[in-house]
Amino acid sequence: MTWRERLPAVRGKLLMDEPLAALTWLRVGGAAEVLFLPADEEDLADCLRALPADTPVTVLGVGSNVIVRDGGIDGLVVRLAGRAFGEVHVDPGPRQVIAGAAVLDSAVARAAAKAGISGLEFYAGIPGTVGGALTMNAGCYGGETGAVLVAAWGVDRTGERRVFTVAELGYSYRHSQAPAGMIWTGAVFQGGRGDPEALGQAIAAITQRREATQPIREKTGGSTFKNPPGDSAWRLIDAAGWRGKRMGGAMFSPLHANFMINTGEAAADDLEDLGEAVRADVEAKFGVALEWEIRRIGRRRQRRA
Ligand SMILES: Cc1cc2nc3c(=O)[nH]c(=O)nc-3n(C[C@H](O)[C@H](O)[C@H](O)COP(=O)(O)OP(=O)(O)OC[C@H]3O[C@@H](n4cnc5c(N)ncnc54)[C@H](O)[C@@H]3O)c2cc1C
Image 1 (cartoon, rainbow, N blue to C red):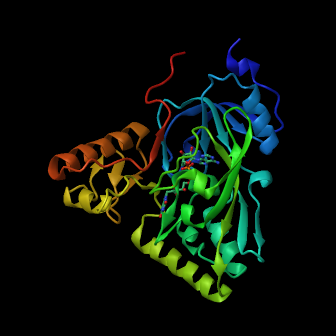
Image 2: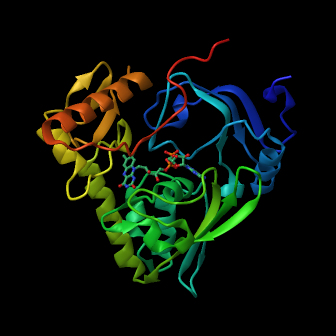
């Protein structure tokens, strides 16, 4: 019997060979061997506990910073959705926002602003989930997750529930030292005191600025590469002549040179090959090795039958 035939009973959904492209912003890639939509944290923990230890587990948020490769993802892919992971609460006394991992960052920003909690407005500019933000230390315009987080909790690969304070997560630029395999299910954020109307205006300004400077209506994955120390990835890509350049259906955006776009016909391979061509060229011209910010997950080629 294969591991798929021995999957435990769950209260959520287990979907075999489920296509993933539509669950990502870049709209590319193959299928999950098994896609798991847990009903709640307990369902997730029970399933992980029962899964053979050598079965790979991958987590997806709303796929705004990933390329799922064309051969799909082996093992179990977990996607948190629904009420159990999608609630956001405000505690006005200590000025804290408590959010499930599937809550959109923009909903955290809006809930905080409405309650007069300042410092979380930057989340209005990030189109991911709380779970993605915890893993990526998502941030923009001077704000970042590690600076506003109090604690995060979730389930590890063995199904054990664990809680971490922000200090224990060792955040740095787009990086955390959380143990590999943690699946975040929720977090609490801390803000300061602010005026709801002014915070609402700050959010509107961030949204407008995004519209003007990023291809947010395209199939994109956000920043392709991390900014190297003391420089900007977009500046190097631009200076190397790649702004607006295409390879097949993959292109570097004319609007923001560090954003890759699927013009419609790209495969994951095209996007990854274009990214690698740019990395090699930037390194040859400027001696800077760009590091991928987009997470590339799965296998490049089809699994053998
Ligand atoms: C138009 C656009 C603009 C963007 N602007 C910014 C920006 O200004 N600043 C910024 O930081 N990012 C930006 N991004 C990138 C992206 O939105 C962030 O990285 C976001 O935090 C990813 O969240 P997600 O839910 O989409 O995660 P995904 O892309 O689905 O996953 C990203 C990583 O997080 C992990 N992950 C997701 N959920 C969980 C979970 N529950 N537990 C454990 N791991 C998890 C995944 O395994 C993966 O490694 C932008 C993207 C786009 C498309």
